[in-house]
Image 1 (cartoon, rainbow, N blue to C red):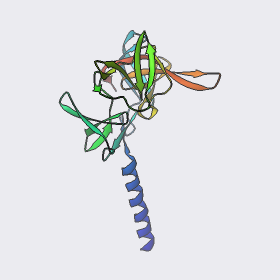
Image 2: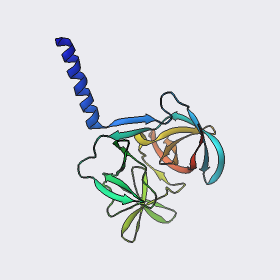
Image 3: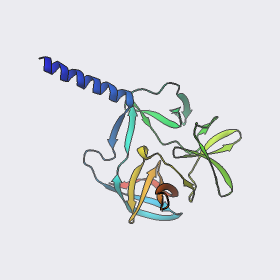
Image 4: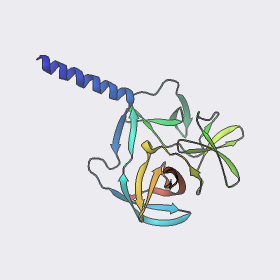
Length: 202
């Protein structure tokens, strides 16, 4: 009986720690589902219809039972969006899930740790897979410009895929190509394209 009580106590503590740190939701097509889908994609501004996207490492949606202290609430197109420390959340299936930030969304202050990027003669602010531009004293979320190179992407919220034999990371429906610097073995990421529309088949 004492041994059973100790095991129950350990399981209870483990569950509590998981709830505090945030769980991981079901992977796309979870439970041993298909490892590919067909998408319309743009790669280097070239449109490719109904191409097979092979999932090398599926996205796992990060979910939390409660929002972090100090979050902000925004109303966007009929829904609440919650923002904290550069991450955006929505309420989904009784938990809070990290979500892609919608293009056009506006903030009055940039998240701490952003970096300046000049591309195509335009100034951008970049943080955690999101590009912003300052427009009328607001920081407006932009489409990642094709050809821009960043030093980091949110790998925890990315899906690693192969399209026509090339490996990419998909973040918020946009495709990044890893570039390894042979001098110091560091990796940067180039915006190369995006998905167009929903999955066509699984």
